[in-house]
Image 1 (cartoon, rainbow, N blue to C red):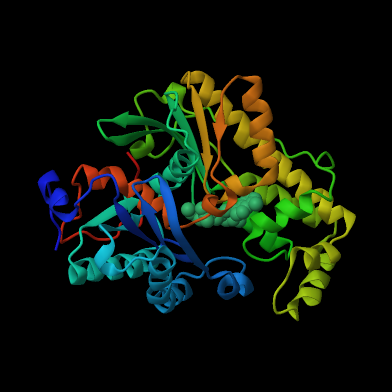
Image 2 (cartoon, rainbow, N blue to C red):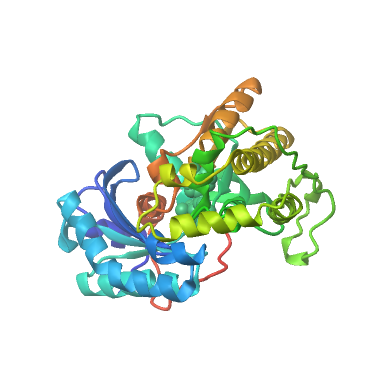
Length: 396
Ligand code: KG4
Ligand code: ZN
């Protein structure tokens, strides 16, 4: 089923310039498929979101996620091929997310991709989801005609499952990554989701808080963040150049919001909001705004300001310490309007260009997986037959 070596890939293609890769992504709560040409053109992009399934629980329920992926995977892949005007026969390779993510969810996409690659005799490429988020930026820059990047590049990957700083470097035709900072506990997106759950603002919390924060006073409540100077307690996470590391921590702010709610008697208001929104089949941002008082709006605005300030300050600190030339900000939280605005303003003050994916490619999608697979396709780095999902896969 799988083939290795450059000569093999050449036998699949009459032309190296046009390589169509079908990407498949199922690591969390989105079933996605996309076709990307040569890592530079988004040809189709289909994302089936499971928000409605997980909404009543205020977070992703792994068993339900796997079941929903099973339901969606075949129609989503077919749709991506149809939208691209492609068939299983006319694509050049299949790329699939190998990890990190929910084991059961990853397995649905991976087993399907493996079977499909075998059946239609196409090479299969395994992609790290975090590398995918970084390549979402590269794909869109190439699509705009921007082929020039100044190195070193620092990438902040900030999502529901990750808050990671990577130094990204070119190596031959591919890329290598060095982890120079990460969260010691919760991811930033997870903090958005947990605060939204606590305040009965639905799931996922990020987009709702992003919207509501525009109506509140971000100076109303102070949520201080500490610099993390001590070494990581987990020896596996220690690095030789630990003094240059910049780590994050977002579990404290979630507890601080909870404490605020309790000391300001907000429980009753939250219960009322739960009742008011329970009957609504589909809750819009305006529905949430209608059931929020000033105190709640100020609280979410202050929470968002604190998280954004911390993400931006620490990322720029790492940028200075590593003397980086270009900044990427990607992952679901990169869709946040205040984060974008703040990064743009503060990175400009430091003379560092900052690149984001479009909002559509900030959150999980398969175009980023197909784009990240392209250099591996050129290098003939195809998956072995025993290839499987790795829930805790690291990016290197
Ligand atoms: O990248 P992603 O789709 O999935 C993971 O790999 O985790 O990120 C999802 C996360 C969720 O936590 C969601 O609340 C957050 O991204 N998110 C946002 C926004 N849009 C999505 N957070 C803040 N502001 C947003 N506009
Ligand atoms: Zn993601």
